[in-house]
Amino acid sequence: MPRHSRGFDTEAAFAHLSRRDRRLGRWMEKLGPLAPEQGWRRSFDPADALARAILYQQLSGKAASTIVGRVETAIGSARLHADTLSRIDDAALRACGVSGNKTLALRDLALRESRGEIPTLRQMSTMHHDDIVAALVPIRGIGRWTVEMMLMFRLGRPDILPIDDLGIRKGAQVIDKAVAMPTPKELAARGEKWGPYRTYASLYLWRIADSGAQAKEPTKRSQE
Image (cartoon, rainbow, N blue to C red; front, side, top):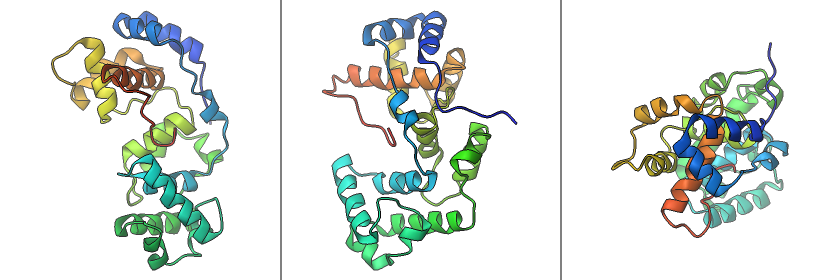
């Protein structure tokens, strides 16, 4: 069974993408090499990462960070998982600022973890990225996009293209000087030439979208 390492050769990815797509390549030369390797080196617990992703949904980074801090204080741990979340009841979670829907999602995540339904890092290392998506999207509050962020920023899988992400669609619109953003289906077709480094292409598309919007600093992505 093949084992997937965390991360990939970004220099090879840069060269490949520059060669395969001149429009994207011009932007890549302008922005310079991107180095996401630091995130791939950090150890993490998949259940904890998913719990944090749930808490960060639909909130600003500052607001979400405050709520996460309150939950960590309430459970007496910096790790959110089945055992530690069991230390706090629903009312206490709500008092931390966690919504009712997110509370239900955290409980579902904890229950599935306790049943052994959340793959460990070791298990994920032998799984295809589509199989990881299939294993995690049944969790309440976890969609494909959230899993894709884990695959890109935590596991360093090289060929992920989040076709529903507005930033990536906007970046593709900018490089192609198109009137409208591509649909997810159009983006999937457009991205065929970026394989097997669609993750690295996506990192640039986000930066290009930020640049096109004249953002003061790159937008922080979930789990980045």
